Length: 389
Image 1 (cartoon, rainbow, N blue to C red):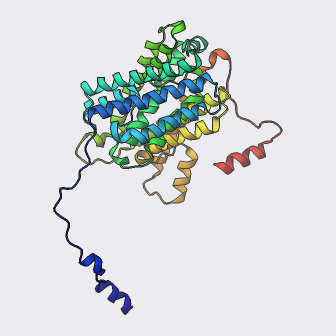
Image 2: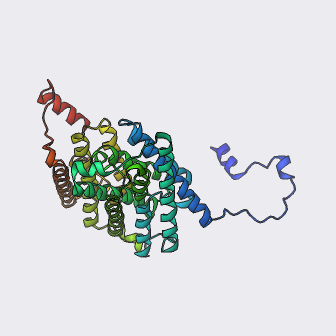
Image 3: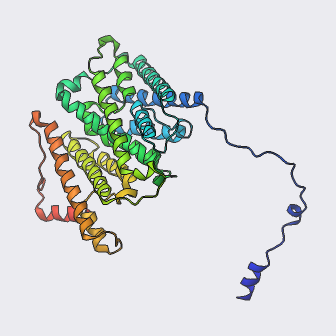
């Protein structure tokens, strides 16, 4: 209409007060200063302190239902509060993974040698301070030796490696990978890993996934001072961090070169394998541990891996999802060959994950099985499973 054209072609004059306002004097624009090294170290100390203090408080009051959520939440809010200053590592394994990514030529700067060791120092100091703080309240400490005696050295070590890998891998993908920047979900995704690991794996290994947690708990247990198992935990956690950096290099290869690369199908298949493996392992460990928060733990693990890998493969992690995407006709890139690769990776990962949790609980004779529960029949099972799928 003519009135619309006129309104676009003839902009309204500015109000008199604004039009006649004197021009402000020339001033240099205020630029946001980069955080100093000291502010980064203080942020890491504070965040690590509150993490270990929260761990100790929840363990001491035996918060079996809300403990994992409490610990994951304090990590999440600390990352949102302090991540803009120091990166929000609060974990020597995470800092180790970040430094390896930088060494490999990734999109990270400044975490070689001096800063790496300074971060480690303040993280361990924060962890020890948090441990002694909760110790002063309850007048007793927490030992990790009971987990080793109950399940064995190998079982504990393997789960510490796997879930520390998951934590560091999610950090690298949501906070470092170029494809996911910027975003507002990074803290939620990282905290979700703690929700996932605390209830299932935590029953077996204690759910530390962090050398600062390990040493903070063990050193606060000075009435029965014994660091026998701490080196095992720390070694496994650093191994998980290194493994996360290596696989991140393969999955996000475009982040390590200036050239723009298309994601290879082999990388997509690996992405589907990793997400499905962590999902099924978390399911199995929660079921066998009779977790009081299994649904929340499993959902959080799935959420974290989706945030981490959705820009790689679409993060299906489920043959039913892959078939639904194919049948929708809205993803022409999902050829039959790619669908076969996705499903093959998902089924292989599911099988290996089930073998892992059965092996962990092999000494106790526990296992999982599918079938109708209680007075329900197969029609009810099919309706529930099919409906939610």
